[in-house]
Length: 333
Image: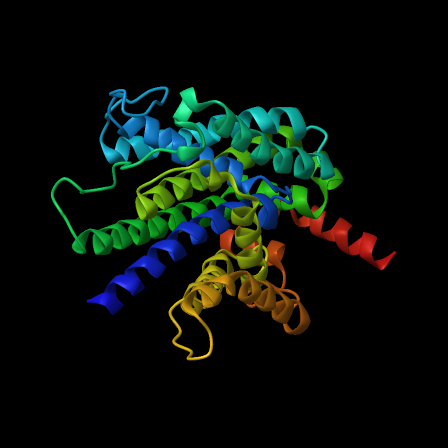
């Protein structure tokens, strides 16, 4: 049973980070939008879920609002909260694009973290929220609940994967690919670059928020550390391992990274204390990234031609074929 619980815990974490990696892949791998603020949308989704699903504050510790809604409604609210934040950020930065989005999104995560730390009236400050509701906790108790959480998280990941894959292959996804490949040619084809980028950025942020919600299910507590930049780095490393622009790569890279990182803590080595093994997690993560960059710099499952494959699968090569031609011409020069 203990082994099963360990596997369930790792599976839940894989589902959490895989969902965030899928969302980042849609923003960065498909749309070319560099988002270093994954933790901001991740955390806002988590807090949105907590406010929606927790009962009103009884004075034991303070938080701004508690709506006591069902867990699935709270999860949707968490995703929508992340979307609203992404809309605000996207409207301001995506018209300029480039490095500005990366800088603003990175600063945003730290700014939001400091807000939740220094304003205890919002969510109990640095002490955080305890006993955040998790799915089916009112009917299932004990160790079995961990198995249920893993099953629900993997189910959410499966549905999200299908939705993101469909979006990538749609006309909307092809427009994003065209913008990523050659923005000037995409404009000449009549694609509204700014509007398309904002829609893609907001769409992906919803799934980052849902990933934050699932992380709360895993922990059942919520503190401002959820806005840590380490979360952003982990998602980026997982995507690099799997391969930019590949949805299967996002999931596979996450499974490899989380499996290695979490598996280290369960090794039994006589000359290394358990707490020292836990401290090796970051080292394992870094070594995995170095190995991939040395031997598979394009990632394990990166598409050799993201544009061409998407066009062939969609059956509409005329939409962005000029962008591909322009890219090839520019490369030959």
